[in-house]
Length: 419
Image: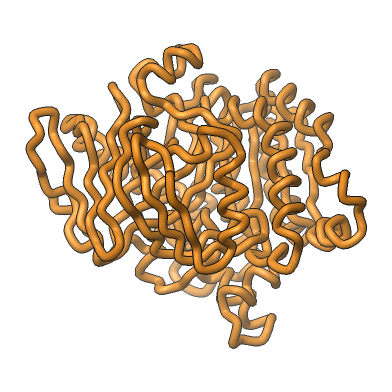
């Protein structure tokens, strides 16, 4: 890693891209010699995918397999494919991915989606296609959410995404600005990015240690349009930054990351909550979400845009109306301070506290990785075909932790840690 140490001064785009690739392999994945890697990427991300492939082989990877996605081909399907085809998906591909993970392969996703790719498409077709994909992907997703393997996500600045973030800039300038934001958030620009990530992980772990010592029964979110009590699962664990997978490899699932997170109790969520940032989901922008929970379940839901898609998401299965994650992020996080709305969950969730509908992470429960589905459910962990994060934190949100004795303790005020 000493090769990353440089004198202060300008660093070229190519070198920064190479550093991001190195971080993806050595920090994000912690890739081991002899391990296979399965990578997915948009076709525009070929330069980063190639660099990641090179660093993976230098790290001793036995085989790197990359599956490229093309948004124009996706749009062609929605324009031209027969209606009945939207209830189908390439299940054979997801079966193969699950088989690769069971055999020990690592998983890396490069993200750079157009946030509004499917905005003009039939919401029913979008929902049916998403449901078919979610059902087929479930076996692979379970291996990821159970941390059976080491996995990670990194970003690539595609033109469509850049124009969504910087709509008033010419395309080349928008892409350059988005790259600057990605590199900064991914801690690429320091003299030793890997050392910077080690220090950042230590800071996040210290926050987790404080919250784990408290073992709050409930988190109470209060602010404009929000009065939400999120009961926490019995024996919950707070995690953040690097995580040890079941295969013994320490990975950083998200590059970047600023959150600490845990598992809510699926039946103990009450009250109302409003989103503070738009949610970009599978090519649809869902804005100004407002929902009400009773007994852990969403019983009312609306949104200013994308409401029909939101409703279809909530109909995926019973677990889609319940929470699988709650995460805390200070308003002063670097991603929040940059002032950008990324229209990308990987970034926006690290600018604000958030909740996730759907599947819970079993490693956020004490002994959870060794539990059966029935045991996890008994502890309060939710099960679903989906896992969708959306942002509810801001500088106007206060959070209290409710102890087992029913006492309220300040955790965050105006979006910032109290201590």
